[in-house]
Image (cartoon, rainbow, N blue to C red; front, top):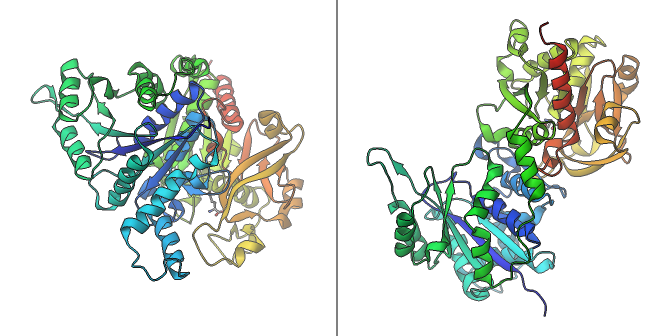
Length: 542
Ligand code: GLN
């Protein structure tokens, strides 16, 4: 008999930021570890067609998939947990839904009918919700609905879930609702009322959750679980505690302890193929929690006030730290605060420096100063995207002594545009989805630091930028000692630059942080952390 995919919908109530993405990814991990093929998709209720045009202060970093989709950062969690790439189809926004429906309307596809939220918008939402399941590649599709139940903009999604739940039937659909059970200090008690209200709100839309996952700072007693179950039409086993964890990577194990995966499988009447095979995950956690030493790495960027702005970079350091059995203490340093006068004071305590990606002029001179400091003091350095571009500019200004040396992004009239637009990019006037996006191949130069890190001669990495190293300067840079250790074999564009006379000075035009996962920590991050530790050892006071 052919297997028909099961659909899990995850909604959130009470407040945002409860960690729907992490709970979804953790459940997916457990089901995957039991031998099921699982994917997760995120439906976001905002009107931007994709988050590519949002600045990081709005929704944190923009995650980029292999096929070049600019997506919500939760897709980063899905990939880091599952170690399986996602794609354009895994992130849908209200903007994209409406864009499609309006296009159809203009094409006359609705044959004179009034086009309405129900059924036309909800039909399109449902079609997209089932798309990945229909590929035949997955046994279970988890759909995370962004926002909070009760928001006006979430309504069409909740309505679509109601309809789909009915169409698919209980054996093929399941709704998990994530809520908060707050602790009231004054009363010395956990309070269930917000959860009851939030479930009522879902019920008003015709959706009965099948499982409740309750975020809490304190363990849920049997009584509290029974009370929630009673008020929400559930069995006690369907009330799952999600207690605050030391690290997000603990959550799959906490969910296993709560038997979330078992409850899901029994709802679907699916056999437990095997107990979850999580040996590698547990080993990773043990390395993470038992570091032998620590290193201090500076993350130089301009969005450092916001933790989520560099989410993938932060997580890549967690993976690389565990791989090296080192605790990586990341010091977020605002590039706008770095000046010639204070740079050595601001960066003196660091064992490694990472200059972050970014757009626009703000804070770039601080980044150039940080690069110069890392180069001259021989501190292990990794520059990502804009960070690499700043490394090229710093070298041009201070080693090649090029006058008016800049990126044409910041200074379109610079005499020496060492970072410049590609020909194809010059013609582009639209902003959304028009950068160089997604995976491109790269040839790695033999015996370079990059080759040592990757242990491979051909790699593929993800991109998100418009500007490139200007190949007109390649020879003069090479003569002055910078090497180009990664080149795109099709376009001849520079992908990696490095300085051979430095312990570790690497800049990459792509974003390595987008491919680091628990099971595959990224080689450039692993090398940076390792080199930072060696730097620290060399510089210990005697
Ligand atoms: N702003 C630069 C460009 O567009 C770098 C982009 C980035 O760091 N992601 O090329």
